[in-house]
Image (cartoon, rainbow, N blue to C red):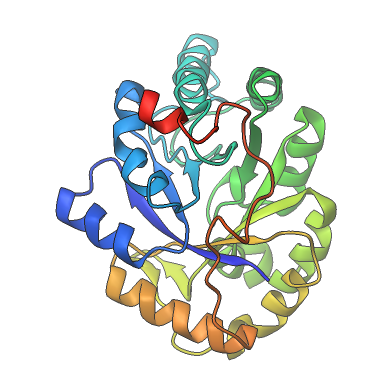
Length: 273
């Protein structure tokens, strides 16, 4: 059964992070792209409580597929620095994007080349890179996401809200449930919540619109679902609905969720950081 993780961001207040630590079964953390050196201090409080942590580079303004080669290279370097600081912290998994800036011109060859470089660099450190599907822009095409992932060796993080709201689903060219089948064995992580629109992410209030998609997800090897809601009250209520859907309470602590961790994570590793 999947772990049901919460989300946190480098800009969160200390009180929000503390509340998240008390409520989390797992955490997906978004670092500061300009201060990767702050990453260990941000996640160690979770790791010391045996809360598994993954990473999420929501790096607006740092597009690895930028049409300007110089800008694309700068974005790649920002992501590489994050990988360096991730190494030895939490679970060796990071979700990345192309298309967070809809107005940014892109070149597909830059997407493929830089994503491949990132995957190769991360792979040498035992870290898995996942490419996320988006709701709008070039990153919303699930076939392109799969193509770029296959070409680079990346895995895929499927965002259910993005899937439900993308143009190909709205135009009845594919269903979110069929998207699960499309991504298949490349699927490594899920972002789950009710839906997304121009106002942002909305909590789960009714499992019915998600049920077929989630049922197919349960048939995959993907065992990490991040409830991507900033409001912890809404995240907790959405988790309760998901737990009822799953048919049992999902504790998902590191004691029963251990997909593989870096060798550096011996019992004294975090104390040395």
